[in-house]
Amino acid sequence: MSHLGVVFMRMLAHLPLPWVRGLGWLLGWVLYFVVVPRRRVVATNLALCFPQWTPEQRRALIPRVFVNVARAWLDRSWLWHGDPANARKRLVLSGAVDELKGSRPTVIFAPHFVGMDAGWTALTQQLPRAFTTIYTDQANKVVDAWILGGRRRFGTGRLFGRADGVKTIVSALREGAPLYLLPDMNFGPEESIFVPFYGVQAATVPSLSRFAKLGRAKVVPVTTRMTARGYEVHVGPAWEDYPSNDMTADTAQMNLRLQGYIDAMPDQYYWVHKRFKSRPEGEPAPY
Image 1 (cartoon, one colour):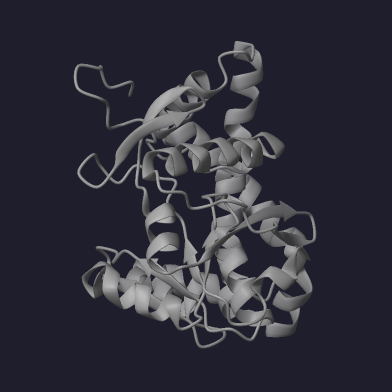
Image 2 (cartoon, rainbow, N blue to C red):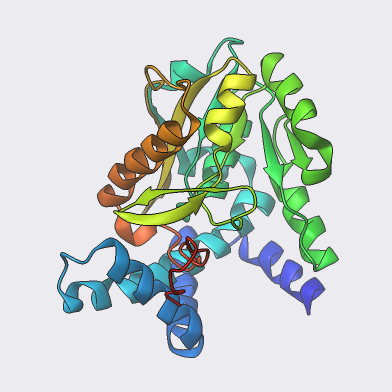
């Protein structure tokens, strides 16, 4: 089935974008109705993060989240298998792109919006630097090879595994290879600290502050918005006075800035993730 799925994605790459997005709309609604436990996860996340919204507002957002997740997944077809010229046309870099030029050590804060793979593709295809990121192996080896191949399609970027260790990543960072980092997920309490996210304590890895400090690097935010024509990959100005000498304060600041990015496009954040699964001692699990 995994092999058939890859073949399907290769075939899908040649369809017009509106057709791909239409299939994504259909798949998203199917998932919304079928994957009930994950729908409850999204509902819980939204209730915790947006208590000021009415229940109707939160319910209306849930199917849009599923549709956007499905559309982004199917978009990997043309990102990884389609005509490179089409990909370049559909991926629009905007904002402070000059922040990513030159050779200064740079950590890119790339939050988990549905277009995160589109953002990586845009940077590696359109900018000359050798970008790096951190990759978690997939249990399904066919899917694992497909994802690795897709993310290595353009440029000379490197995907570090967990076994590579911090020293290897920091060495590449200091040598001028920007690190595309996605630290805004719950990776368990062992490597995390609890800081507020929309006012709720959330287990958050302090890797953004740590890598910026170890690599003597600036932090540049990159957010990717899905549009009718593809994606807009927006590069923000480098954060001032970051990192500080307080890793906890830095991580709280990261979450606070992330909230601003999410507020601009809440239906495109990866709410299907159990962001609040790990709890401080004594607090009940919300899911």
